[in-house]
Amino acid sequence: MTNDVDILVIDDEQVILDAVVKICTGEGFRVDTALDAQEGLRRLAGHGYTLVLSDIMMPGMDGFQFLKEATPIAPHTPVIMTTGFSTVENAVHALYAGAIDFVPKPFTADELLSSVHRGLRYRRLRNAGLPGSEEVKDPAMVVVPCPVRYYRLGYASWVFLEQSGSVLVGATHAFFKTVEQVERLEAVLAEGELIQGTCCLRVHTHDGLVHSLLSPISGRVVDSNTTLFAKPGTVEKDPYFGGWLFRAIPADIQYELGHLVPCSSDNLF
Image 1 (cartoon, rainbow, N blue to C red):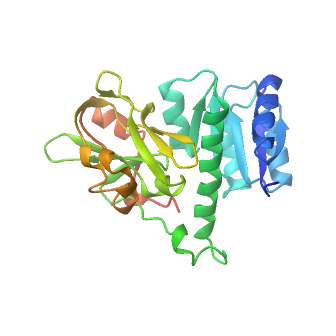
Image 2: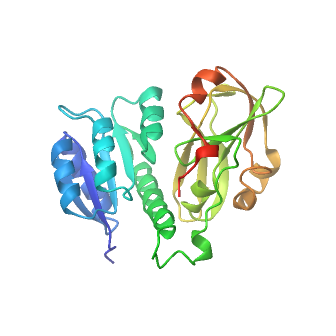
């Protein structure tokens, strides 16, 4: 079966392009490639791609500049960023700049495909809110935005500041809408710590994929939502209140909030 999907992959390493083409065409996707960001922009301007995967570290124009210039050309095309120089700063910067996901190299086929599938579902959710969309009346396409006093990293994770000084961390309704039915939630903590921009949760879904959620904040975890972890299928019903994942004492809240989007000014969809 061939999927009606065109993916543009931009990377200055031919071996990476070949690997992504092999993985994605194996799923039935049509894939186009570019060896630099300028060529990627030219291809993007001339073709309505469904999804873009772009490296960050490239000669000439880097991935961040590509993302900036690609937005007015194809404002409704999601961009996933990849890089072999996988630092926390790169991940956070990419998501703040508008990328919908960050995949560090080297990545496995499963890691790439989980991100690609989320990207494709994200596009459907975003397009459902556009005037004239055939999906706008589909209840499955309705996304509940983060509450006003929350902050988000990218579209996927959120943080809420409690009056006590601790924070609650969770995943957005949009994130759970981009994955299939949740089967298991797996906490990923480094000695009980959250680190902004690194994986804090793996979401196992019934289609066999495993999705990584990046933490919006750094801090020491003092509590986990054991009820939610025991019944993960309920998380989509209440992702912002009863659906919190971790309670933590933040490490540098004022600095890290500067890398997050306040949901009071949210226009994600």
